[in-house]
Image (tube, rainbow over all chains, first blue to last red; front, side, top):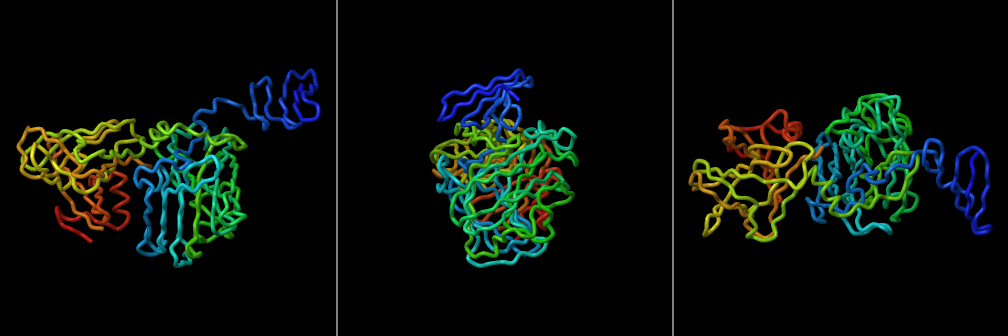
Length: 397
Length: 58
């Protein structure tokens, strides 16, 4: 037992004392917090520690959309054996294998109270019955450095709770699954959409995996997957750890079998513990910086906004550095840019036909720009050639 | 979506090969031909094959 301090609407303050040395704080007779010899605890007995950074999901409220800026995009497989993926709102990847029905994804402003944005996926107006090995999976890959404290793969593995808001046009049971980097450990839980086209909050608690290999480096630590459709190869038994690549159960909704079906999600939080706590609303700048560890996009503010100054080498190459605003997860593996780039040394722009990463680092890259008419050792401005151009550096998992 | 392979000179003077993909939406993506580069490995896994320099491929 414990000494109880209870506040309710009948008695006001009620004190029930004992000699246990423990203290419980109650509201209306329900325990909200405890102080024991182990320290401050929540109602479930889990330690209450600093809440800052509790959410291991980045951009769970879908506010950051560097790549698409709120525009819709479509992902589709070219055959029933084709795998492909695309980044939607920052950190959120849409993976599909063998889904030939086009899937549209978009950051939208339809969101439950307390949120400003959600991520929306819309199935094509045609339908597809997925094959055994096919899958459609929105997911976020969490870096191992951010999940190391969970001690997964050891006897001290910590329990996690995933909470989120979902709105879907198709009612029924959907999977939430976890896998490791090697996709040889999996846990599939489920949630039920009860009312079509209505925001509903869902919570899933998963006991940590005491087996398997869970990376704690800057590689993939925990893969959080919200399956929308999957073939029988991915089915398993719900709510238990299994070996292999699993992400669904046999009774799950088949999203792509429903013409123009929609599914939206926001407020996604993955935290240590057995219960969900309120969503951690980060300041925008903080959240943007967290996203930029994985993808940094430079957007021009005008046609005259220099990306960098670059030195001429030979007659066709320029070399210049771009510094990143935050240290990236790893050396960027690719660069994506719009059309229209040019070199400038007074007068008109001369076209830059290709941009490539000559040297890659986590705090800057040296870019090689292919162009013409270069004078060696002269410095040139690299300009976007328009008021809406961009260049993005990818270090996603 | 089309792509080409270009060769550039790295800062240390060695030649580097890069894939330049025309994404078909006015954007381009480039990455080095490098078996340790995740982007390149994913691209190859999607049944793409690096071709000779400057050859366009469907």
